[in-house]
Length: 227
Image (cartoon, rainbow, N blue to C red; front, side):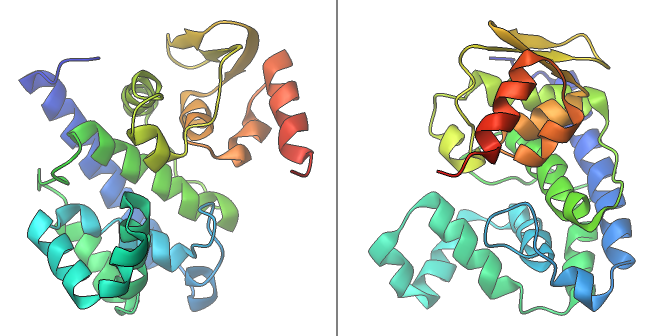
């Protein structure tokens, strides 16, 4: 895995701040109907996803306090369940407050205690697309930042983090970026923009419309087949 040097850390946090800034600007322009629109995250609205983006600044004590206030979570506790429930609770905040909290994260290097800054980068890149794509809005991801996040997701695809990010099985496929010099895997080719490959690696089938190659055709067919 890539070592987190001071230079890399600076680049990662700069990319995080840039995406936070542009995501907040996009949210500023949404109507109430758009805030309640379904996102790419199963069972989450745009509001839920936006709220989730405010939770990176919480300490472990904040998570413990949330569980204490919501003891039912303990009966089916998992990392994803805790993330989901905390987002649901916080989504009751006014939209202006949610946007303000995202902006308040700009310049901060706080991240959740059990992950690295590369997970924070993945969160803001991917979740910003979870908001923008279903609304038909363009929120460009920097290819270099997407490359860093995709490399991290590929390197950790068989770890606990794969469950958090919904990494699909991609054995037998060769992923090739068309805008940066990045490729991973062996087999049927799946080619396209780095951002689309990042979305694919994190389980977003909506990315398939931007991808080409025999492997992309196979993945599209599988995604269209019920069950």
